Image (cartoon, rainbow, N blue to C red; front, top):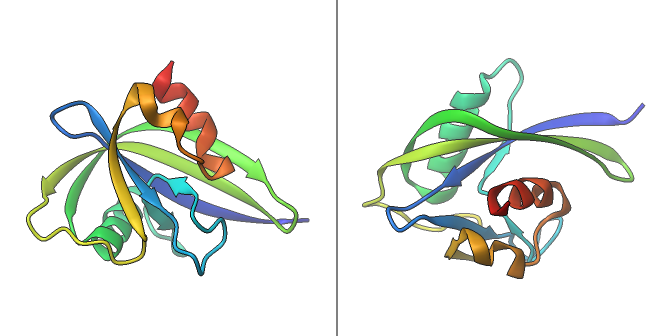
Length: 130
């Protein structure tokens, strides 16, 4: 049986209605592809707390995790990813910096499909752009 890896992703929307998109680093899986920022849930960690922690680690910003937007399960050759994406509110963007990603963009929902997304994120992109 394949290992299930539980991950969380943040849907960050700015006052202009644009969504934060992050490009994966060259030295990780799916290099150069776009994703919603987030990461793995640690053992016995609450998903919302995991997302707050991951966003602080990756972007150095504080967020409030609001409601669950989408859940996707995607099977790969060696494992299964279970992704839970949450709508989030940025509480403090003043110390923002990219720690793990190589690039970021704020994009209108109508433009999201122009990016090359990680396969696990595509169903959520589709739901956002519907």
